[in-house]
Image (tube, rainbow, N blue to C red; front, side, top):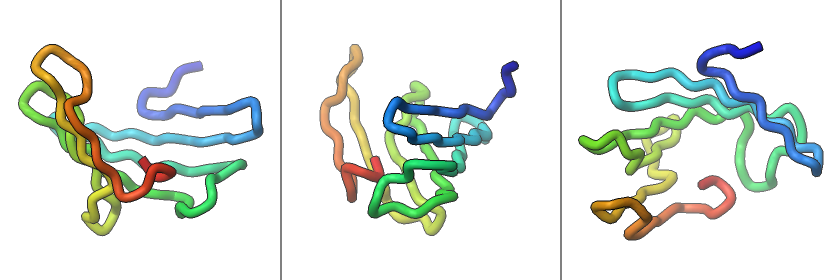
Length: 91
């Protein structure tokens, strides 16, 4: 079955991640919940805000306190021009 806004990711090494997504205009709010295999160094039940540019490309990701998680800029015809994040595990 398919539930809009819910994604359940599983990996061969036992990670189970639930991602709940809600759209607000062109932007998104996601909650990340690990049932198993949560990576070290990040918290469970994270709220993440994805802000998009005028083309709908996600360019900025913020945590639940408004802190910067990652930022990305794109070339005019696709591909990443540059990318920055506070943690490779979190991004």
